[in-house]
Amino acid sequence: MFDAAVAAADPMKVIPPLLPEKPAGRVLVVGAGKASARMAEAVESAWGPCEGYVITRYGYGRPCRGIEIVEAAHPVPDQAGVDATTHLLGLLDGVSADDFVLCLISGGGSALLCAPAGEMTLAEKQGVNSALLASGAPIGAMNVVRQHLSLVKGGQLAARTYPARMLTLLISDVPGDDPALIASGPTVGRAGTADDAREIIRRFGIELPESAQAVLDGPPLALAREDRQLSKVENRIVAAPSQSLEAAAEVARAAGLEPRILSDDLEGEARDLAHAQAAEALAVQAGMSAGQAPIVLLSGGECTVTRRGNGTGGPNAEFALAAAVALQGLPGIHVIACDTDGVDGAAEVAGAIAGPETLGLARAIDLNPEIALAQNDAHTFFEKIGAQIVPGPTLTNVNDFRAILIQPPA
Image (cartoon, rainbow, N blue to C red; front, side, top):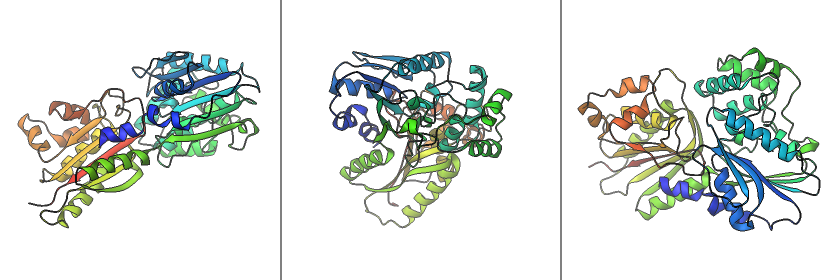
């Protein structure tokens, strides 16, 4: 089911059918995100070699014939990302009203498109990004803040191309699929005001350096969605979590299971969501009769983790660990939780599988699941019992994938 969810969002599958005919005249392809290099590869499979420049995560590059692919850091930006963003903006400054710009955006673009505003240094930008990631703030809230501290987010990328025509193709990794929140909306406009950003910072206890506070208190940088400079832009979502969950449901049906899609846009603390879904799974199992077809609960969205310990973890692995603790080894319930981009948190691990055997495997090597959960150390826990999912770069990103398989009581 996880493989099907990833495959349904493969840019090579979803982009070529949606591309218009290649426009006459100059065409420039730009983009950023964990799926952007694969998106560029898909564009060239339909249009042939193109002029362009795309920024992706280290290890996520793809061979392109004309589009230059550069790699930078994610989820915390680095100097390579700053340099690449500067180069990309310079390319856009050279377009005219007769040109056509195709922009390829996916999750991860918030870190990869890095242009700190005002007097902010890269180190300060990295500090703000790390604080946001550790705060437990949902992705939408984080991206509202990012829009107001950048020279490229919140419509500013598209503004550099005006009055050229621009088509942006987006792969959504945000609950609700709001284009303004995907990679912080570089071609869409702002998703919230500076006052909204200040409230988010206050609510989640994020300390800003003076340079960032000065930017936030200064003239707004992110554009309103109705700004004239965005009037030549069309934003189109080409893949979203709902499509991937439907693909997983088809796999379940083919295997004789009954799929139930709970939601494609769940948010909240990973461990809280795990407790709620474990309780739902128990209730479902209690209502099943012997011989009934197994039921699978499917969900997507983006969990968060408020860092309390110093372990190595991510929201999907933490969900799986918290579910295992909540289920206490009860038979007939199995859980998988993975990020569709292949990276859960900052680790090169998609997520983990948990089931009735999980706690027993841990006890056999004196591994305490409650301590691992308290230390946000889920990746280490699942590595030690051999239950990690490590697919490598998936070249797409439609957020979290969770499935809970429920067998009837014996």
